[in-house]
Image (tube, rainbow, N blue to C red; front, side, top):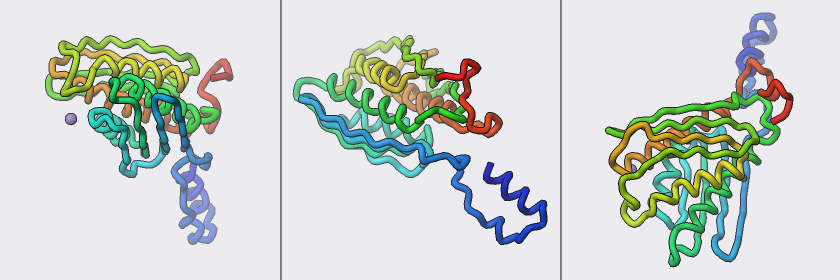
Length: 225
Ligand SMILES: [Mn+2]
């Protein structure tokens, strides 16, 4: 919208200085950001999300493997995540990973607000060597997870790979998204996890991208999301 406005101004022959108006790149909509603070007896998480900033993220959850995955997700999804978390990892990583999914889901829901003008659907298929992972999602307010991923090992390093499903289930249900994650091929668990998190980031970027043709309307024939 911004670029078109600038072109129209120039076409009308107005003061060319007006063409220096800065465009916020966000179709004039409010910033799509969220801040979440969540404390329980099991975890403490502070999270800031900016869907429209590709600045580098700062992530420290106390679980280096998850820090690595969330960094990949944010970088390839062109979003900025500032995250500080800690939890009862002396028991295991379960509470912390699930609560990170809850907080990211809540942040996503908050950042998207009324969901006006978004593309709504997003898909990405991402390879990593022998691995190919596909993520398809709908910002639908219909929480659902279909997770067809078969890891041939239970852990990578000391990380329990079963927790990846817990993370995405918590995320999908708290964000209100329909989320399908399929592993099309893959052997090495670290590759599989990376491809899934990158594909999620890219699919989310595509689904949350503002679509200028619908001019800020809700992408639903029902009129409700
Ligand atoms: Mn890696």
